[in-house]
Image (cartoon, rainbow, N blue to C red):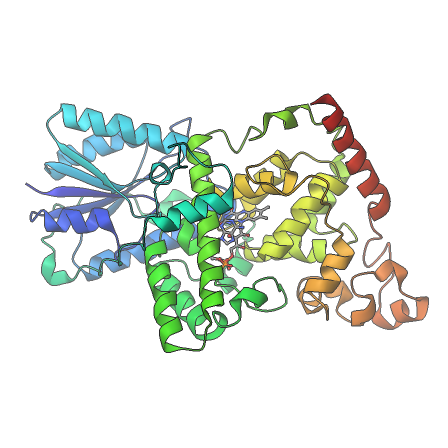
Length: 481
Ligand code: FAD
């Protein structure tokens, strides 16, 4: 008697198992997105994610129209909105793809049983992960806490299913069009001030934008990915993270398209395996989140609860957010984040390490800043990576590994092109001094138009002293545990 497809973190038509099932059921189909700012347990979206969501929903609305699928956006408490929508649409079933963060899981469980109690069919599907958290286990049947055995066990399950095709107009019987709100009326995009210019210039949210970015990656960056992925001065990665985050592309599509590209093109098996291993980290982080739902607020390793953080320095924190620490690679990263809503993975590690270890500011503070400013802010990947850098996470980097921002810069941005792109005050600095302007001779600084402390800050902390302080704090933790 017809189905409601409830779209959430899966804003796409191709390879969408819930949508495919609704069409296969044979009756009329109606699609709905619920913008829920009322359920208290839901983590409010950050600013950059809100911007992306608005654009992605607009793109989805157009795509739905093109295949004759009625689509509406409604606001309110998810559970109430879905119950009303099912009645109004006059459907007998509701389908959706699963999510894995605690508030979402609980809402979905409650809804599923309430709908079933009332005689509706309610079914959920997997559209987001190659392997759902409970599908990968240790030999003893337990959740895994270390990446390598996790990824080995995941791969032992065999290759993922092929992606489902995009439904065509001819296959869809249009259900009742629900009345919705205008996407512009949701107030998701900033106006005064409009800080989203850099985001607009960098991204095309939506399924078509994701497809285009994937094609660019396959054509230009897959070959050499294994080595270039660490170079922020090159476009060496897929830049698909926000598209994956909003579900505009699925990991199944990525898994199979890199295989096809390799068999037809010059990429090596190593490039393909390395890319897939990164998808593996995404999967591992979802596994960790599912079994540790408080990952964004609580240390995964409880002994870190005793870590002697000390009083956070507000001026230091501000300098970090604004990209004014005096360490060029850190500042370039933080400004790339602010202007484009994205930061290269290598630089995310450097900037996160700087906040936690050089400034001794709690990883939660950094996680929150990234949550607000990243277009790919993710329930699993953001806290898991912050805890990885802090040392408190699952399979984390050891705490005593303190990234040296100077040598990291020199190694991964050897000519300084990445710094020059985001820190215009240093654009005339020669490569030799671009990561250490405080060591540059006066005539070099003068020629580059740099006056330290005026046009560009002096380092806000001394690396060697900061490193010593971080290691001393870690020693205290060790002696307590
Ligand atoms: P590619 O190199 O092309 O990788 C392909 C995909 O694999 C990515 O899109 C992503 O989904 C996944 N992936 C790659 N690296 C990682 C990783 N280290 N952990 C988990 N998945 C990975 N990623 C997010 O998607 N959302 C976040 O909120 C997020 N926060 C982070 C915070 C910190 C402090 C750090 C160090 C990393 C964070 N990452 C996060 C992981 C990583 O930096 C991004 O996924 C990556 O930079 C995205 O760029 P890409 O799509 O070009 O990656």
